Amino acid sequence: MHSNKYTIVGWLAVAQAILFPLSITLAIVEKGVATNLFDFHKPFFGPSDVLGLIFTAIAIYVLWMFKNLLNDHYEYHDLDLLILISIWWAALFQVVGLGLGFLTMIFWPVDEKVFALVYIVFFASSMICIGIVDILIAVKLLKVKEHFSEYIRAFAYITIVAGICEITVFLSPITLLMIPVTCIILALIFFKDKRENHTVDYV
Image (spheres, rainbow, N blue to C red):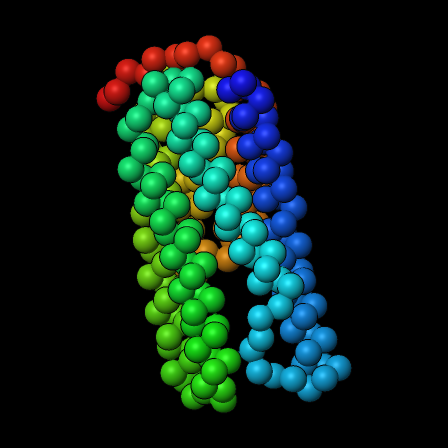
């Protein structure tokens, strides 16, 4: 039953890896079509936003199940709080981002300087927060890496690189390329990780 459950989560992680670049590509196409074909410059809620919501919902579930896998298979609970913070961050990032988008639509046209400042502050603070959390998650996993599967170790390495890019803010766009890779690694964790329990010695 547990094996079945984690296999389904693995396929959801694969879906994430597909949905993310798809939503980004669709957003670019939407913007291009609206601007160039219809001379429409006002922000709008489109199909890419729907895909973004679906992606976030799946991401939250996958993170929750990753926490459960660490609990069930390794009796490892040291990441519980950090993963919960990541989940809340993902939800808040999506909600606040959509909220700012709707406010922009309502009050359009907006002052470009105010618009840019609000988005820069929101984005920079979000990246720094999640960057710190990602680094802490990776460091904790790497402290006891010999107890984990190779895929969990790979997840820790890519997470620490992502975290470093995020806290610099200006390197954070690089993490966009890492997201599908991270999703595939998570999928491999759910597909390949053995059901046997391994007790992790806390450091």
